[in-house]
Image (cartoon, rainbow, N blue to C red; front, top):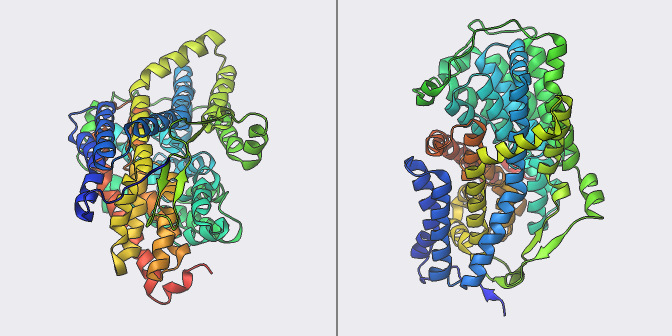
Length: 554
């Protein structure tokens, strides 16, 4: 007999909402305090989430534990799997010195730190977001920026800020596909609607990124380059999403933007070259940076090409592993799925979250061959062969990498356990319903609901799956366009990506700045909230104010 979710256990929506928020608040407060390591904070928050689900929301203890275990495994595969293998590749390139050559090649394009941020954090990061997503962009770009000499806080925090506008089309359109699956709206219409909201922010985010790093004056000094970077990305994002589909938006937009920016820098350079890799504001992490080695002669053309080979292999593998054709072909003969006994179809969603009662499936699809992390592992092994590592050394280096990221893997597993538990217990729906009671202001708060979903789960796809149906139902009740509010969930969600604990742990791991997750969270939190509110205001304009109402996809 399925257990039906309870969304108002106290018979008072205010008290029930406060109870539902306790696990998330516990996690954020512990991390932000800077006194509790992230993996410990996550485990404590998981214990609190279990207590709230069982004691307050009446979820049977057996169901709650199984949901948490399912989430933990999902956290390790595919998310932890991606991080482990990206860091493995990065460490191999550092050991051979190829990473140092790559850094010199980027410096060869421009020595200006602000322009390096545009190329790496925004353009290069957007490519990896489009090709693979799930933490890959932050892991790669933060590691590269750290290697270029950026302070740990700058490398981590700025990579998180940059990884926003492209997120809705990440992993070859996975968030849009997930949104379509729960709303029944054509993914091309959803992709087009998101593509009428986010291009403005694809233009804004590069300015925001450089402003956060170098301040207003430092930003205005490279205004032309930022404009070229953001405008080219926004234009390609709009065209691809509205006239081609949601699947290759980020890949095409990032390549187009990078080419435009590099071409522009051939004919223009700022009058003042910004060489400081630390944040303009007081940056305590800069004091922990090792002294920079003396400048050496630029790398030869041959060495530069060789240094990019591992990352080229990674791009190819990540792209192939992200294609529907590859996944369909491989899953056709190997796609093990394990229904979770004692949980599968034993949790029932009820009104008002769904129109009719519906059971929640709980199937672990352990399709490891098509996981992006497996493609990255292959890229790392192939790169190791190219770099002439012996098989024994590759195995030893992999073991060393596991030890380096062990706490991060624990944290990610605990985070996803919390996110999955909130879904099956109905805690997420209680928070969502609180937003749905805002009436005229719902376009703003519905957008913030998407932001909250990503902050909770660490995934725009997961947020869309959690709240997409609720957004559609609420929009229909309020007389708003369902396609707009469904798209707003995804567009608002991208701004929550920089504060979700999973992304922060990825950033701290990539920069080897362990134990400073609270510092990173405090740095990015205000940027996340302000950008999400701006998205909400844009959605409000599209919902109510002509001529913006004409942007709604028909």
